[in-house]
Structures are given as C-alpha cells and as structure tokens.
Length: 277
Ligand SMILES: Nc1ncnc2c1ncn2[C@@H]1O[C@H](COP(=O)(O)OP(=O)(O)OP(=O)(O)O)[C@@H](O)[C@H]1O
Ligand SMILES: [Mg+2]
Image (cartoon, rainbow, N blue to C red; front, side, top):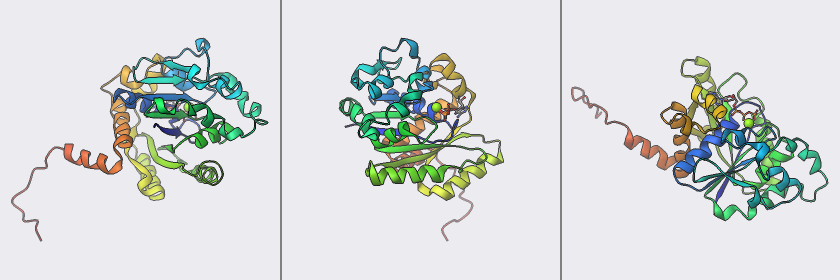
C-alpha cells in the first residue's frame, strides 16, 4: 500500500514544485516505486521531469474532468522507479468545471484508488491556492508536506492553511496527517534565514523536518533542462538536501536522527578535562 503525500501551501513560489520533483526523484533513486501527480495548471512538475505537456497522451485534466482512468495518464520519466501523471494548462478551468460534480472533493481520491497498490509513494504537487484542486489533493492524501520559504512573512497564511487542513480532517479525510514543515531556500549567509527557521520551529515544534533545503542555484537551473537536480548535478547541495529529506520521510524522524548521529565523524575527546561532574 502506498503513502500519498500532498505538497501544499497556498503561497506562491515557496518551493512546492521543486520539492515535489526532487523528493519524488530521491525516493525513486532509493528504489521506492514513486508516482508524481501534477495537479497544478502551471504544469511545472511535468516539464521539470522532462515531459512535453503538448505531447502528453492524457493528463490529470482528462482524469478529473472526463473521468478517464488514471492509469492511462501515467507516463515514464528518465528514472526507472519514477512515473508521472502530467498536468495541462486546461486545468485552470477545472475548479469551475467540477462545481456540479457530485462528491467533487473526492474525484482525485477515486481516480488514484486503482493506482495505489502499484506504488510505494505518490507525491502530489498542488497549485498555489486553497481551491478545489488542493482540497481534492488533501482529501486523497495520507499526509501533507508544507514547504515554507525562509523569507519575510514566512508564517503569513499558514494559519489559514492549518485551518483548511482541520476542516478537511473534520469533513473529508479524518486520516490526514502533517508529514512535516520543510524550510526551503535557506541561505546560511543571511541572519534572516536563521530567524525565520527559529520562528517556524517555535510555531510548529517537532513537526518541522530536521532536513533544511538550502538556497542552491542548481535546484533552480535543473528544471530548464527538464531534469530533477539529481540527474543535473548529482553532487550539488540541493541533491544532498533532497536525498536527506527522502531518508527522513522513509526512515521516520527518530531513526533518521540516530543514523545521522552514527554517521557523524567521532569527536576528538579532550582528556585534559574531567567532564564527569
Ligand atoms: N532551494 C532552492 N534554491 C534556489 N532556488 C529555488 C529553491 N527552491 C525553489 N527555487 C526556485 O524558486 C522558484 C519557486 O520555486 P517553486 O516553483 O518550486 O515554487 P512553488 O511553490 O511550486 O511555486 P508556485 O506557487 O508558483 O507553484 C523557482 O524558480 C525555483 O527554481
Ligand atoms: Mg509550483
């Protein structure tokens, strides 16, 4: 049985797509069978893994609106363990087209039902809104991953997102968990990044991933080559960050922390001081 993770934040440009693409790719490289579902009309995840959307035989639009089987929309990517259901600009009208559909918040959940057992992980890249497409994603998912950009006003709007998650839990999907809050575009040179990280940790506590995504130019270049960063520059900081995130998710936080502690180089012990007091 797969785990379905929605990557959501109604704020634009916080790293949802970068996270969806590179988390999915890192899971796939670790040989977890992974499906990336692009439910954003901007279709950035689709182009980000090299899919030419104009050539896609069937996209998430036909799956949601024409009720075509989701399996017909699955396309391969350059990574053997990663497949994608692409999006299309036509999806901009979907929120209105779905309005009269019975159980309109459950359309994606029903569509993914037939696919669940084929994958270990399904990652859904949401659009920057809390509209019907995001509601469908939250209803279909086991958990939600919230990217937060280390910038001014980082926490702005998160109250509204948490409120939406609570409403979804009450009415649509009681199982919905928070996978974690992910700090993105962290710049070690900026005091602001440190301050925002601290603020987010004060607010969300242990829900914040230990893994932090640094600001890394390779991450922003890779999409224009239609590649996840791991295929564009395997040795980049961005690649390592998303491998860490995938490990934190697959291992669980405690095991991840233990494995981190063990892999750290042994500390030099200063025998001149007696520390046992
Ligand atoms: N860690 C990073 N380092 C450098 N650039 C990044 C990083 N993460 C994202 N970016 C860049 O920031 C911009 C916004 O990122 P992204 O598209 O992932 O955000 P988004 O939340 O999906 O945006 P939207 O709300 O429009 O869907 C992109 O140009 C992306 O390449
Ligand atoms: Mg996006």
